[in-house]
Image 1 (cartoon, rainbow, N blue to C red):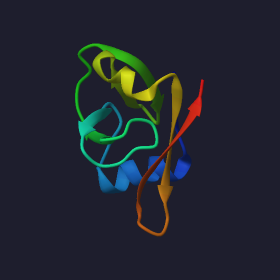
Image 2: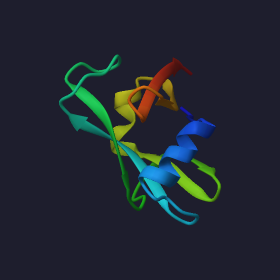
Image 3: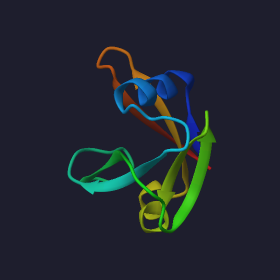
Length: 97
């Protein structure tokens, strides 16, 4: 599994979440919402410290990660993070690894 962050998503993280160099951003599974992968669950995002990171990537010295306990959600897919320009919010796409 890989996490791929687009340039527009990087800008969003810096502006909307005020993410700065040296910080960590976690993608986590939450109950509720909608997802193309797991009905009844959706993906959330927060600043956090890794405890048992399964997947990590870094851009501009900001680390993005998924914990081992949340890997099941991705079902063997890579996570592509972009921005929905109409809604000005993050958009997630999943591609089989």
